[in-house]
Image 1 (cartoon, rainbow, N blue to C red):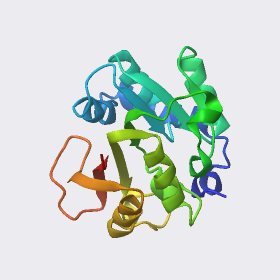
Image 2 (cartoon, rainbow, N blue to C red; image 1 turned 90 degrees about the horizontal axis):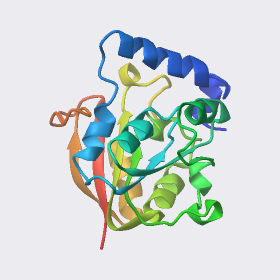
Image 3 (cartoon, rainbow, N blue to C red; image 1 turned 90 degrees about the vertical axis):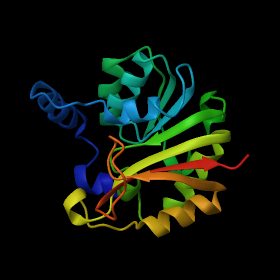
Image 4 (tube, rainbow, N blue to C red; image 1 turned 135 degrees about the vertical axis):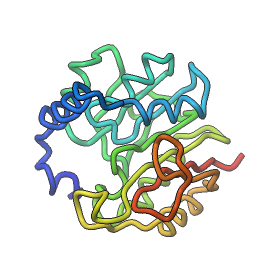
Length: 203
């Protein structure tokens, strides 16, 4: 069972969405992840939102002209995403077993984004399998972008995945580190408790 399901019971979609709506009403920019991705690939590029949740990132990227697909295991989160953007493709699947062909989707994404602590909230021991499955969905030269917490201050669960461990999973999947940042705003990484990593699939 995933750490996310342990944490939420798989029924927190509406509550999760309401929290972000409240932040937006308070003036917070809710589109940092989408802006980060948009700076990496041009409009009309194909983007897979892995662990898409309620669709906040993917819906914004779609509005900016990207060809997006969302995947999540939590049906309550997908219910919110589908209600907000029923015209977009939302699929329920375990990322450790995700096969785009099963859903009639081509495995040639220009970018895969895993925002919102997707990696630390996976089922324990599946991190390498998930990274491998995400790498398989990329075209040669495609990018994997993942942002997640590394310490208790940036995670709702005890930290489990270190950057060296994540980089090792990426290397095993044929991915090479391109850059790393401390925030989705692009601040330089400073060995702090949160990192946004950009890896490229070898050509």
